[in-house]
Length: 367
Image (cartoon, rainbow, N blue to C red; front, top):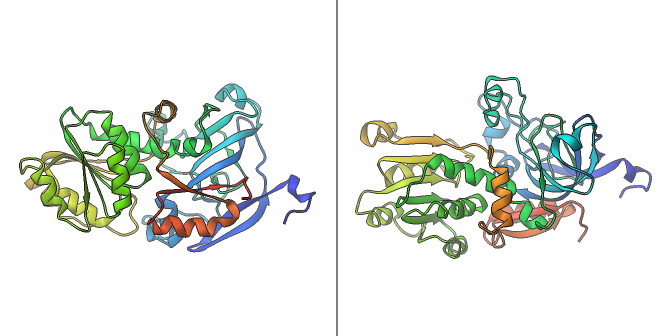
């Protein structure tokens, strides 16, 4: 427990040291500098990438090209909070004041590399993202966190509940992926993975008026929610031949668009099989293990358009508006919320995924 004196300068935070070695510790409350913002974290989501990092996926701890994680670090890149400190110039730059609800884009651009200088900041060469590197990049699994100088920050409407606002980051990623898909009227669209972001993609894709919207997953509960949120067809890939079902639903040709949002290597091969010639494949999922495919399918056999999707650039204002207007609904997506002290229980439930979709922590709540 904090001493009354220490509590003024220290906070509770989850600190990651190595796979499955995350600890609840007292750490200094971030200090604020010029054009910096400190928030009191209201909620923070546990993303699939957080889980794979916790479980020790090589991509995070070994690379290639180099280890992505730099311990010790405070995880959490999906967060919403209340402004408690503003450094000189921050209020004017971000239109924020003390007490405002605020969010920061998940990447901390360097603003000096060729990508940042050309407006493509989300592909910044340094690729610093909240919640994986110790120091200024520390994330939201703490009572307080800092938005460093140079970050991209937004005011969030106060009447947007915390358990809705915490989905702004996942929704921004979903919007970008759907934008990358270039869905046309009448297209048959398949989304693989009915997790939090996949279910957001489903609702955003619905706004594009596709001809048919198909959701794939292995969990019946998630597929039922997908139906309630607008899927025309849901397929449990563990129980039926998804490729055959999709082809039967498209006069034998296959889907026009395939968006991979599960992060399972099998979903990549499945997508390449079920997509039609000249179709568009969008890869969003973060993989814990290497995915291998026959590239002749992509070139010689089908001449596919292959597109990646990373983060949610320029999409935060849209995400905030979609949530405010309930064009995208997340009531059934945020399923569990725990106090910070129960982070291990939260991680366990999120990892199982049987009854949960998006699990969040509320760092400043004790019950």
